[in-house]
Amino acid sequence: MYRDDPLDDEAELRAVAGDDAVDALLEADIEVDREPLEVALDVLRVLQGWVDDASAGRWFSAPQRRLEDRSPVEALSAGAFEEVEDAARAWAAAQG
Image 1 (cartoon, rainbow, N blue to C red):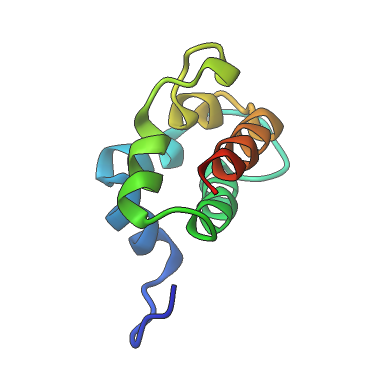
Image 2 (cartoon, rainbow, N blue to C red):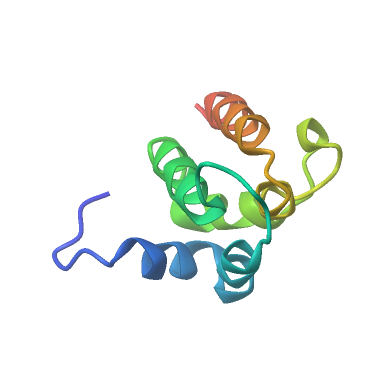
């Protein structure tokens, strides 16, 4: 999606997924190579290729069967990065 004044990444994710979601990602206390926020931004880019921002925002907070009925935010906060990335790709592909 083209924007005249691109938002910084965190602000864009806040606009799409909400402050509570981003705060939860930032507060995640896990030992991993990548930060949950970084992975969420990568996932957002995948989703934006297939769905509008409102749909992507709902996806981040909705329980997902592929994620053992956790929301993507919950799963990312627990370090389930690959599982969330796989779930996002599968969901996005099903939207097309």
